[in-house]
Image (cartoon, rainbow, N blue to C red; front, side):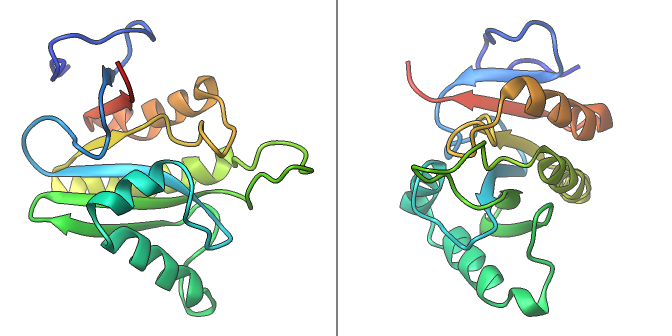
Amino acid sequence: MWGVVSGASYGEGMTGITYVRGDATAPQGKGVKIIVHVVNDLGGWGKGFVLALSRRWPEPEAAYRSWHRERAHNDFGLGAAQFVQVGPRLWVANMVGQRGIRTGRSTGAPVRYEAIDAALGLLAGKAEELGASVHMPRIGCGLAGGKWSRVGPLVEGRLVGRGIPVTVYDFGA
């Protein structure tokens, strides 16, 4: 079991995930880090956490748009993950875990738990390869409309269960 980077965690009880208040685009701790977020399968990038990413680095958005544009010739689709290096020891994972986007007249949330689970499996392999810790907001629970009570156990099973340190950031005070 690893210690809590911030000195204090809160909520959620005893799990292998460390919960901190802060900005997931400024991950805490030492070593190689992967910042993880969920994207949609339509090529849209313009709301939510992606805006914070784009303010820091242009590469994740450019890579995602190119990946979507060339999807007839690559693995783009639900459950896929793209890893974009943005610094010497820092990566961003674009994980396709959302079917479409929510519109005023849509029914149901666009989140796809099976796709997030599959992408987390790919993420686990990359994190192990790099010896990286994983940092994320509550993925799939913002614009995608998911519930952390469903996503959290996927993160635990795919990452924590393989010994990969995970920190979840809740923005704000």
